[in-house]
Length: 475
Image (cartoon, rainbow, N blue to C red; front, side, top):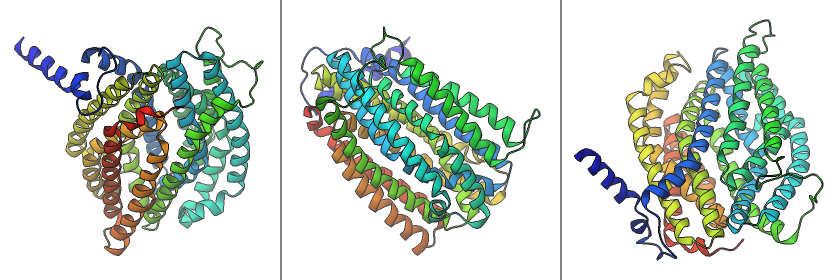
């Protein structure tokens, strides 16, 4: 009994809205109890967290299945990650704008504008997807060579990349629709979309990578085909989700897809700054991956395994960030900047607690976690050391993802872009080269620079969030 009372008291103290607002702004109305704000956040967050976790889990399963072909195959798939994300960068920027504008319109109760925003975004996404994916498929080999592909991994990487990018149109459309759904707080729809797509991915991985149940043994190409089939399934489910007239988001093919001044300018204002951020991030990530690739296929394979494990912690941060973004945007649309701050801080504190738990988990089980990916002693030894750095990174990474997403959805994307330039574009790449090459620390040096990057972004975004000026930006 007493334990329950003490626990409840600690809970109320940590998440009490009045305490969370004390160093920010005064309340603009009655504040709900902590149980209600946490409950609202959890209702939106759990589907996003589960979705992100399953996406990360499928990525891990992909790596484990591909790993049966050898560490060269792991490197082939891993080398395509940054080039693929470069292709997606523009669409990820567009989707930041979609979530920001739709969440604001949801808060304002403006269904017509929200749906027009979705139609405009889909038109832009479809045209750009066809153009960019065509160019990427054509230049696949030189792009992957520039990314640092070694001769033993190049052929597999090119094959995987061309198949993935050839079907990425379906992925892009599904992501745009899900960005709008998340802006409305409909995270369960996005979760169902990805669960079904990932199930298809895993099944066809099993059938096509190793050639099971009479299917051809296609190796790395089979993994790519399985992922593309998953993209198509996600596309179908996403389209169906916005074809129900009784829902807030409804995609009507009878209404105009052409841009209107108010919503399109808001979309572009947020999306353009997010695009600049993506440029800085992708260049930084690309150079970072290139430095690691220069260490050899074994080091890059170890890096890829650890990145898959890191994605598990990112899943929790991403899920909470999506929920916080939706509630922050809706609160700003309802003229409640105080509640926007409360939801942002509530998500960050919950995320930090999850990160602390993951820190202990990764430290205690670091060698066991590596074993499903590879039995090679060098990879296990190096991967176990990397996981010590990763464990320290978890609380910082989750917190910074939440703060930066809240700033983005509020429209403060220029500041986040500058932070990305300073921390990723300059800081991570410079320190990665210094630690890895100059000081000869190898892969450990690269991950130390990664840790510094996360800490830097956390501090800069937390300071900006704490000032509260982002709550007055109009969309």
